[in-house]
Length: 193
Picture 1 (cartoon, helix red, strand yellow):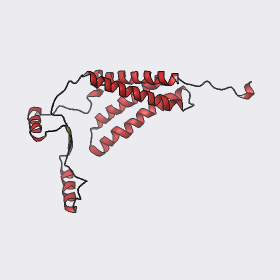
Picture 2 (cartoon, rainbow, N blue to C red):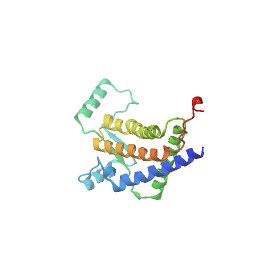
Picture 3 (spheres, rainbow, N blue to C red):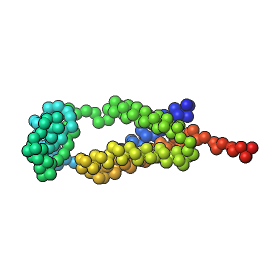
Picture 4 (tube, rainbow, N blue to C red):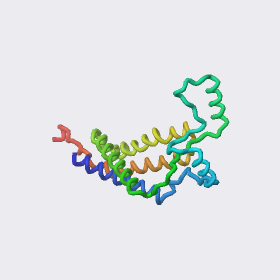
């Protein structure tokens, strides 16, 4: 139990530090993003059109309503013709480096590290297998979260690749901390006695 707790905490710290390095010192934090042209005009139009914070999607299809075949065909045509997109909108600014954001990220990484340490404790793998197991969790996380955003919603490939590098490298580094903890020594066979 001590190794699980220690490993989980250390893994969480590694994930948190790696996330800071990946987003602030490496280009991973900006890959796939670009400056909004005419941002003053666009944000002015958004301020006029939108009142509440939220994730706005266009063209919109209200699946809760019983859409007629004509309405569905019109939505499909609008989707094919474009533009298609998302707008993540917050009408009021905030501190981009607020302590609260760092605390939430640290707690998230800590809980994730502890969870993976618990999962790893159920294995009987040696160091290489344990490292591969933890790294595979990063790969799994990326494949089930970021790739669907690229596939279904057209997120830029370089944005998704950056997310993959961030996730896989982060969990590989966490695996370097977790893998040595809890490795069970090979048991001697009866014939060796």
